[in-house]
Image (spheres, rainbow, N blue to C red):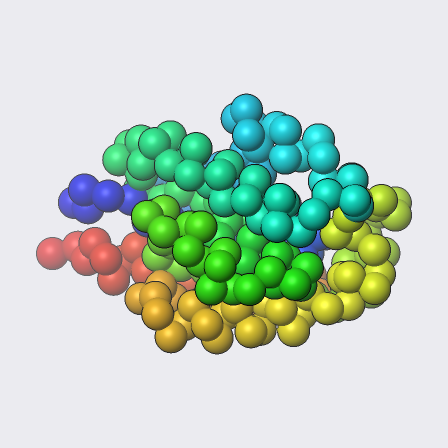
Length: 206
């Protein structure tokens, strides 16, 4: 039996399907007998709530946004660690990779943002939902936040690609790219396979 649960980060641009996948994946894993729980970023805690409230403010300096993002993650670490001791799998709707990619796209040096996140629990598995910004933008009404402008979202695929390469060099986590333009059932199937494979690898049955 594993003493510390698996942290699975579901990452991707807005409207890539992260929230939908986390909900479906939590239900599917639970039905399969794998104890799973969901969380999200920005959090519902004091810093996360404040961060959510100002993300529509395009005048907020990029450095301030990066600091708040990292502060929220640090503030939630104790709650995250508690979840990991109680559950076999913790699914995070956004986590470190998305923060790194979005702030890189705003001009923040990845080395600086990584330094702000020293000491946080690193994921065991990253599920990156890859979808073209133009496809994601058509999933619902137009958004008006600082990170939803077309000129900005167009830069995100390259930012994610660069950040995945950076993290792959320094972290032991597994990175799985999933085509999020395909039907949701296919996305869920790929995610279930990835999580179950890692769970079995970390906790093989006799």
